Image (cartoon, rainbow, N blue to C red; front, side):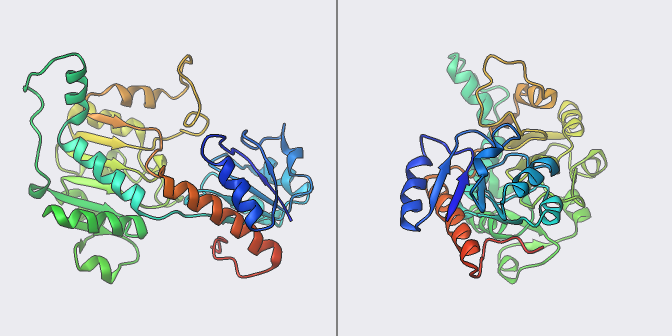
Length: 328
């Protein structure tokens, strides 16, 4: 049973793959590069392919299928980088390997607190020995209303964490949770836009919610609203966000994800001119904290996704129930 693993990081994943591969009796082909038509021959002899956030388009899916690939798993929660429709057309089953919610939930709270306490400005001033107070006045979380969009595992954990701060918590989801109702109040999106001082996104990216935060929805929010996004960049219209920051409509933002980050994040571009103008602009605002899709990145997460992705491949090849398979 052979699995080809792409984007295998030498510094934190390789030893785990070797260890778990041996434990589960799998032969592994490890490649530190992302999958492409140039290196697609590496999948020959592998029924399963294990990837990260690489774009898998129709052409690459077909190339996999032509070489005998039957199962594709991503070591991520989201799978919007995969053309699932094409994979299914070519009879490739798709899976994902979700990690525990705590890492992203912790990171969300960190970005939220950094945003309302103006931590970026404070740190930048401290670094140049500017110890003045003007412009650094923060807010206390207990005085704010926080809106959580998406109450899946991560959203529920964020709500649980927030409940200790004494703030009012609003929630929105297509499917309501009784557990959430113990600590938050479900409202419509229209109510969310009107009432929330802080809005945090925790929903997958779909065709229906692409640019959920846009010029129209921003216009309905409170002046000075704080936006936090540790989910997917495409949930926010970057140009609309930039305009809202410039007018003061958005008072601060904590962004672990941005639109069109594929091919940028996780690579060294320090000597390059970025081809993502919105990212460059957002990074420059003193009230916007931008990190490079790091909320997931904990020791527990890395161990979990490596092991679960291989366990999923083993289940598929042995014809067993596969809890990681994407059914919808």
